[in-house]
Image (cartoon, rainbow, N blue to C red; front, side):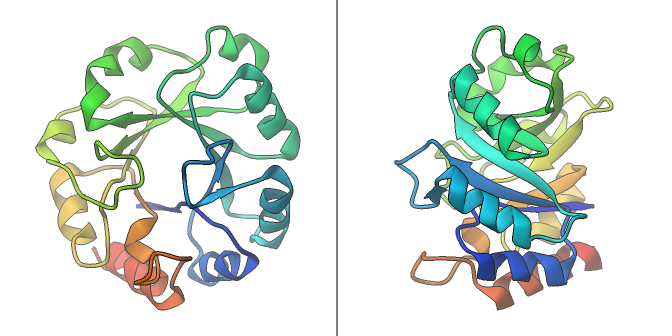
Length: 201
């Protein structure tokens, strides 16, 4: 079971991921509305602090091709795109795309399902970064192929084992579920516990 911790904002948080040997580290870019938004220079410092086995994911919302090119040049392993993918993107970039779907736009799944440039999908709650789970039955029967399926949206140490058992994804994605109670920054103990619950399942 793959584990992605999303919304990193500091070098300290990179250490939480390193000690837990997670698979993916997500960083929010070009989205000032998010409290987790960082710039490319900050992202590069965090990337340098991460264990080389952890794949880095730039998380963006309706980016321009130019922004995705900057992400590629910065050395990210993946780009995760919420909302619209710019036309012609797959002809311009070389890094794989994770297409994120909110439960409100699942009808677009078939449109992207056959797209070669997409390496996987992230299924999230209706409100991006809301920390609230959604009805997992909506994605339980999503067609499976060789593309990665990550379940996100309101996951935490208390519900992740149940979510894995029900949906059977390839991996799970958490952000607010491992943050401090005040919502500022990741909590090391919560990261540890989340990973333990995933691995126990």
